Amino acid sequence: MPEKVWEGESLENRIIIWGSETVALYDESGFGKPLPEEKPNRLELELIEAAYLLEKEKIKVFVREKGKKKKINFKKLMEIGTQNVNQFHSQFIVFRDLRERGYLVKTGFKFGAHFRVYERGVKLKRGPKAAHEHTKFVVHCVPEESAFSLPEMSRAVRLAHNIRATFVWAVLDKEGSPTYYIIQRLTP
Image (cartoon, rainbow, N blue to C red; front, side, top):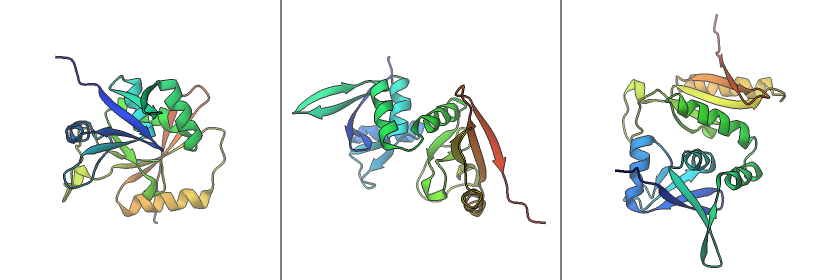
């Protein structure tokens, strides 16, 4: 039996997949956020998640124009992401690399980084969690030629440390290959 291809609608800076059955995409693979929390009727995807799923042909994306559906291809969705999200391309490459390595990847803005990453095989769930179900890494993406602020990096490392996660600096080289550096706080 062929795998289901979901249909998402572009609304502002999110892709919405309508229907209560969409929660399966969250439950099985950790994509998106089911809303509302009680009895969800849709799944909201970040642009980066939608671009990944579109590239993998797991979703189709459309926008409504004058009451009609207009299909958005991968290239167009990447353009939308680049226009709306700072360093979208770098983030996409790191997101894709981490997902391909088997990690569950979610946004990490509240931790001062682009992503929070869970151990391989972890399924997201609400309520109390076992130790292995918590965020393992907090990842921030930068192109290799970009400058950065040491105080900003220090804050991100402290935030990651506070949630017992490891801070990872993902540096994307000009060939589009990420290198991951672990940055830790040492206390003598």
